[in-house]
Image (cartoon, rainbow over all chains, first blue to last red; front, side, top):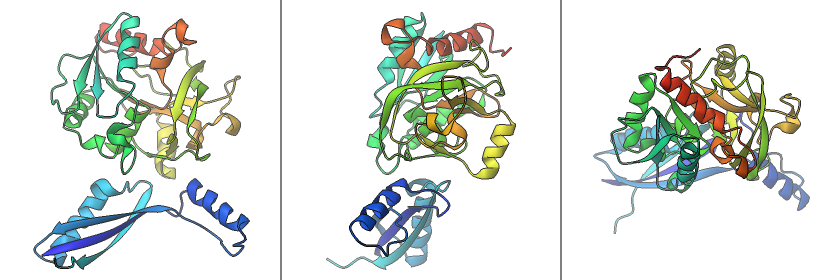
Length: 86
Length: 236
């Protein structure tokens, strides 16, 4: 079965995100006065083959902790779906 | 005395390190990132640059290069390993040093001479034998992600164990917020492992190893390792 993993990596909440702060201040000066916080991260899409969803989930989790995120400063989350056919 | 300089695709300070080492009277050869032998070298250098284009995260991919297993074994045997700038980031990603690098708080790439203090409280390392402890030196910095971070407990332990080797400071040697170029915790510019044989630093000693470059403070670092090697690997 072919799956698509949608992975989001962001800085831990406890860590200052200067890029997010710059964007928040830009949004505020554009008149979006309700904006309270902006956090910037990465979205990574991985297409992979696995026997079943559990195996796919385990593989993606390992990829995240070993390479895709640096867990000293980042957290990750992902969802998995079957790849569309064709 | 022979330095081994690891070259990743995207390294760009490899030749600077070689030139600085040779100008100081030492041998220096390159080690390609796919090589697995690091034999015959008295010190390994992971140079600055943008290994693998810094794709995904600085040094994230470089740390999985074939050569890195040999670098880890070399470090575990107590021999000197230094990572400069991007090389420091590789050592962090590889877990050979604690912590991680974040984007500079200014969101700007900083490129300028920077004062750093050689910490008097730090463990003795093969790289700092010839520096008077507490001395303020000037080295160039050039990075966009040099904002050092470690969890509170780990940082406290590192400070206690004397693992902070260099700190950004002002002209009088004070590590003030104004003299911190990137937002690093505790003004950290360079750290070592507990044993002292693995050092990571953001400033570039190889860019300040000859008077003609505007400063020679960095040369002492090369001389220190040579002294260490010639003394049979003893510190003190």
